[in-house]
Image (cartoon, rainbow, N blue to C red; front, side):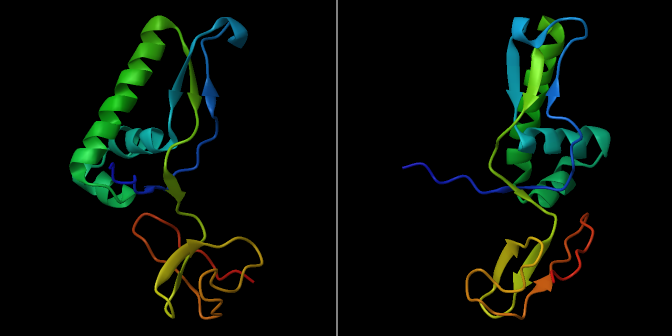
Length: 142
C-alpha cells in the first residue's frame, strides 16, 4: 500500500495560473499542467536562489523529494517552451501558509479564515498564530 502524500507548504502567492505563447488562441494549444508545489519549488530554488536543503525545509519535504519536484517542474517548463505549449498551474497536495494557527490545547495546526476564533478540532479559544520561517506572522482572527 502506498503511503499517503504529505501536504507540501506553499508560501508564495502566484499572480497567474495560465501561461501561453503570444498570438495563438488557447484552444489551438496543447497544455502542460504544473502543480502549485512544483511552482513553489521552482520559486524557492531558482527565483529565491535557496539551497535545496533550505527550500525543502520551507516546503516540509525531504531534500531528495524537493529535488524530484524541481526536476519534474523543469522538465514540464522546458517541454512547454520548446514545443510552444501552454502551461496551466493547478492542483498538487499543498498547504498554503497564510493565516496558519496553532492550538496549544490539542496541538493541532490549521489555517484560519476571517472570523474564526476557535480550533476546529477541540473548539478551544486559545489559538495563536504560527511563526514559521519565511512566512509573515498573521494576526489573530477576530
